[in-house]
Amino acid sequence: MGIATINPATGETLQTFEPLTDAQIEEKLDRAVRAFNAYRRTPFARRADGLRSAADILERDAEKLGKIMTLEMGKPIKSAIAEVNKCALVCRYYADNGAEFLADEPISTDARFSYVSYQPLGAVLAVMPWNFPLWQVFRFAAPALMAGNVGLLKHASNVPQCALTIEEIFTEAGFPHGVFQTLLIGSDKVADIIADDRVKAATLTGSEAAGMSLASAAGKNIKKTVLELGGSDPFVVMPSANLDAAVETAVTARMLNNGQSCIAAKRFILVGAIADEFQTRLVEKFQQLKVGDPIQEDTDVGPLATPGILENLDQQVRACIEKGATVLCGGKPLDDRPGNFYPPTILTDLSPGSPAYQEEFFGPVALLFRVPDIEAAIELANSTSFGLGASAWTTVEEEQEKFVAELEAGAVFINGMVKSDPRLPFGGIKRSGYGRELGRHGIHEFVNAKTVWIG
Ligand code: NAP
Image 1: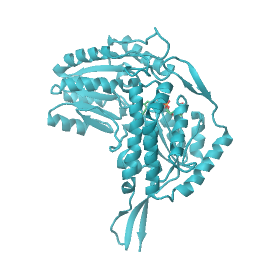
Image 2: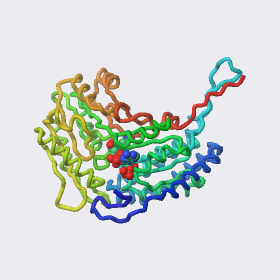
Image 3: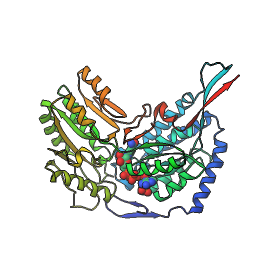
Image 4: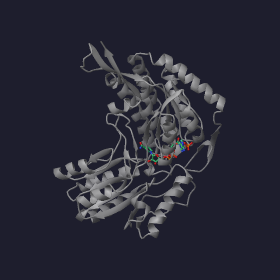
């Protein structure tokens, strides 16, 4: 696939882009090194000013930026604008807290004075996905730049306008030339760039296949990586749950971003007697959702980002049906219109050999499972290779503690949906990846924790 803006609501190719030549990549890597050598010496206060200016620009242009995202990958405009504002939030968060997170940490030893000093690494390559085209990048860039690193962005090939706009935002915010650069390149160039001495570390958000490929290339060159990969998050509903809140949240948690979120609730595990009522209400709510043009304010569910994603989701649903699944609503692509539209879908009676048990469903499809008790719920929740987030609904304190202790995930949310928040670390275990973004943990991923001993 080339680098292009293709409207997922119509299938129309709006603009194509030439990838950088090898000579242009060289020039940008050189520029990153030159920028780092000066930028690493700037005080935190200057970096914070830059991040605050970036936040101002994001807020000023929220509508315009939201429209670019909607045009390139189809998310409903309301959530696109909300995403831009969240990017402003993460910039301000690190502007306000970064210096404290990276302050020297004194440690008493036999030295006259000993401490840990956190120092930037240099150029960090960020390979990013299209699903949250701005948020994914800003949550990498804000801490990385605050720490004194410089960023190189290889964005997904279907969001080039987002990619170029992000560089423009950092430039307008006053960051020196070369501190944040977008590389319009295909994924075939990534391994060579990681191998280059001028690049010190890398982070990737995306599929397992891409994560494995990037981590192998980085491993060969002994470079630090952070991987944020897929998920098949469980959403467990116990008999004591507040059903109104659980159903309402289930809809949002599954439909966010047209169902294309790594931390979307994907497997709904219903325990005991609550199952029938939950299922009936969820079906009703799904049927009320408005599917359509994502640029319209009242659209709840827009198109999937690419024809490939639609095809993959359709195949997964068909495989479940072949293995005996019951379709409670939706169940096949909307072929009465152009674009990559798939309706809100609920499947139940899922058999263990079907993809529902192991694969990530990246679209508006809820998978319903019924189990007799909390033990069975936790066993099923933990039975995938993923370990990103988990949501559990119960008002019984002992059950809450059991979920916190036993769910295998990078995050457990009790009586709420899994979401990212600049203040809280974000990341997975198992095949969902390693390392953390956001919070204090996030800014510590790409720094040298240098031990200093002064006699
Ligand atoms: P993808 O195909 O892996 O693409 C993600 C990025 O990786 C793109 O920039 C892509 O470039 C690049 N890429 C693909 N193959 C590569 C390779 N072999 N080597 C180096 N780079 C490569 O992912 P996707 O299917 O578009 O995105 C959805 C996935 O991301 C889902 O699994 C989702 O759960 C995950 N995700 C995870 C998080 C998280 O925080 N854990 C957040 C959002 C999404 P091209 O576009 O040029 O191929």
